[in-house]
Image 1 (spheres, rainbow, N blue to C red):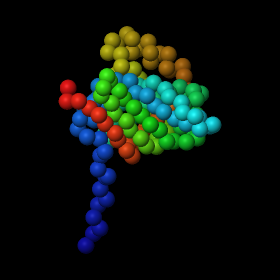
Image 2 (image 1 turned 60 degrees about the horizontal axis):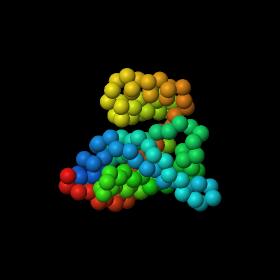
Image 3 (image 1 turned 90 degrees about the vertical axis):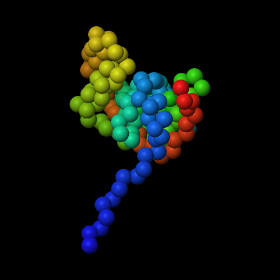
Length: 145
């Protein structure tokens, strides 16, 4: 008799939450400064399977905060609808993957190819880092619109 295959934990994201996150809305990432005060930043993101992927230029305060303390609150709001995801990020510092992630996000948020290309050219000059958030808690208030 063989041992059963391990199963992936069930997704905490409802179908409505997935639909909501698939639209190119902006998110707010909340981190903790070294003195314990909160810091929020507006970010682009993408939903990939059961994770949220976002990216930043190295050297900003909020990525530095996440390197020290990976706990995060991630909120996407649109009028009265909102979704909050809490958890810890995994940091991917690979420069090639980070540039690929930001290029994908530029295309997601800039439907015009020229605008996306201009953004990507600027990002190519930066050192980037990627964050992967697997939800630990999800709070949602989503209408059926």
